[in-house]
Image (cartoon, rainbow, N blue to C red; front, side):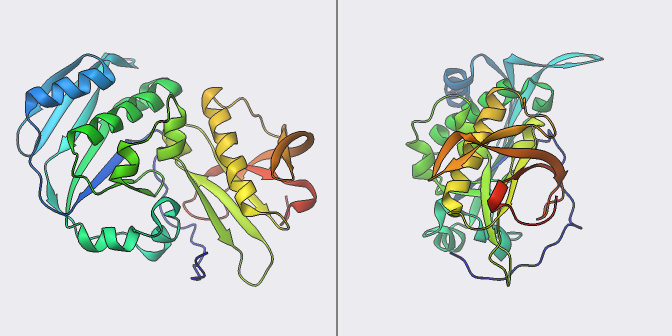
Length: 291
């Protein structure tokens, strides 16, 4: 466990709910924009019909024709954008962000030292899609990018702060919306200084206009709580967040989710940055703090 001390800072700006899903691909050597025909072929296989509206060394843009964003002024296909290769110096990746990169702990420093090039990809207008449709589209886009850029050393997901080795992304066998929980949602863990209290929360659900989760607790294995958070996030995504204020959710007994224990849920402001509304899970006898 990382023992570095961080300061609570709820003054920082929170990302806009429903904003672009931003993928940063890191490389040891520069890469060229893949061929237009190849990009269309790979995207079509993963996403469905696409139309390329720009392709050069700086930018490639594609309309996902099966994914239509509906607005008052009309309907338009969601756009998928890939930027050209640029230099990368690790700026903006501070100790706080790195401390929560649990999926790449042994390699994260090496990645930031060895990777000096990047390619950024994002969706546009996708916030207007239904929740599950967007989650699956973004992950289909990720699968296409992993194929188009086989030398990508690591993928960083801005919306949640997760870092994965490229090999782990390319070989994953997760299907459906659970891919978004895996790559687009980060369950973070903190010890509260000078106490026995701990905090687990998630980051990334707001991209889909869903609330993140928060657990402020003591006396329980945090790995159990992290597992509960991912399961709860998956349930909320699949069911478009059916949990209302003051309702309950199944708790944990001996590491397993158990219906005989019910934990109350309340919408509150986050205790740890970024500032946002979260669904706070009051863990009964293991709960810490005042609610």
